[in-house]
Amino acid sequence: MTVSIELIPGRCEGHGVCEAIAPEVFQVDDDGMVHLLPGGDHEDATALAAARSCPVAALRATS
Amino acid sequence: MRRVVVVGGSIAAVTAASWLRVRGFDGTITLLSAEKEQPYTRVPLSKTVLSGEATDASTALPPLDDSVVVRLGTRAVSLDTTARRVNVDNGDPVPYDGLVIATGGRARRLSPPGMSGERVLRTLADCVALREDLTRARTVLVVGAGLLGMEIASTCRTLGLEVTVVDREPPLRRVLGPVLAEVVTDAARKHGVSLRTVPGGVRLVGSRTLEGVDADGELLTADVVVSAVGDVPAVDWLTGSGLCLDRGVVTDSRGRVADHIVAAGDAAVVRGSGRRPHWTNAVEQARVAADALLGEDTSGASLPSYFWTNQFGVEVKVAGEPAGLGEPDQAEAAAGSMLLRWSGGAAATVNHTMPVRKLRQLASAP
Ligand SMILES: Cc1cc2nc3c(=O)[nH]c(=O)nc-3n(C[C@H](O)[C@H](O)[C@H](O)COP(=O)(O)OP(=O)(O)OC[C@H]3O[C@@H](n4cnc5c(N)ncnc54)[C@H](O)[C@@H]3O)c2cc1C
Ligand code: SF4
Image (cartoon, rainbow over the protein chains, first blue to last red):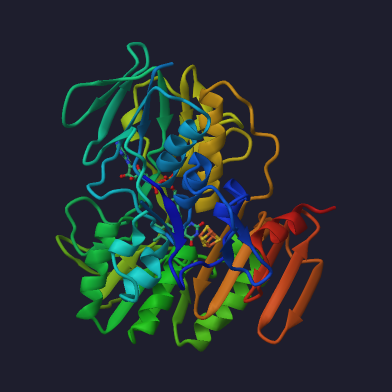
């Protein structure tokens, strides 16, 4: 089973909660929006904890 | 420690459970949530979900993995710290070796028990009920001009309703401080909200149903009355447990309450620094508390707290606590946007794009 984390278009408000937990996977750029970094491990427990921490539920984990 | 029980079903509870796994805890984790929905975020409930722009389902958080047992519709009713058991309303006592208290808060109400008609907004069910009422309303009275009350007022204006907000203090002062509060209040006035300051406070009038609000002798009425007068930490179930309660459950800086017991989020009051009922704080406290339960100390490295609000076309992001700091000592303004800094350890943006990481660093910079 492979898990992949996706950003739901139009929802991110740049609160950076995900980035604070898993900076290897999420990065908020100067445009104030989150970007999923290439090569990040989406199955890692830390990345999934981060995906669950978004206050506007902008991150989805699909398998 | 083989069995951890997490009491609560929202962000502090979910983060604590997730974080125990991140740290390699491989015993059982059982999450007890009084709500019937899977964990969701409350943040959009006063904003896009109340307006109908976003669906109820869009609030769902990504699910916990299968290794965590989630018991929905299960309310903790009392705690036995000697036998190490949580008593619940729908089954046998739940034994634990480690306990996380994450029961958050519930909306404070002004009406006496038995009076109907006062709306509040804390849960998804509250939001659905209020939204339904708003479809039949023309006028709305919001009691409480804090972040929540003003967000509700903003959403009601976008729905075309006539909105009055009453509070005993000027809007948002206590949480944002005078300068930021004025920026947002100005936007609210321009959006046509009627703002009333009633120094003596208000009283709900009615017997079985709410008839209106007594504001220093004047009766205010509206099709819908919604109170946003703060939340009460949901720690009633801990009465008699022997744990130290002082509005919430009292913790040290690592979230520790007693042996094998930690707490995080809106239910927690940190000795010496108090309660911070915001999302980011719930996430950060839950991580530190989960670590403490596993015997690790990760409380040192934290940045200033962070919260935000969106209302009347104004997006405010705040690092640190500017409320007690008066005038900012540095301000940059461009068309419609601002960056403010207080040397006492706070910074804020208004409609200004900047990564929150940088904002928090700016707040803590000397
Ligand atoms: C409408 C609204 C908008 C908000 N907007 C923002 C915002 O823009 N920015 C921001 O920073 N913060 C915002 N907040 C605050 C933020 O949502 C809270 O700080 C956060 O939800 C706290 O999380 P928590 O897990 O500690 O508690 P809660 O979210 O209160 O969750 C507590 C959980 O425990 C459960 N529970 C309670 N008692 C029991 C029991 N006895 N047994 C079992 N389960 C129990 C509850 O059912 C609930 O699931 C908003 C809050 C609301 C209500
Ligand atoms: S936590 Fe959510 S809103 Fe914040 S940066 Fe990450 S995806 Fe965006």
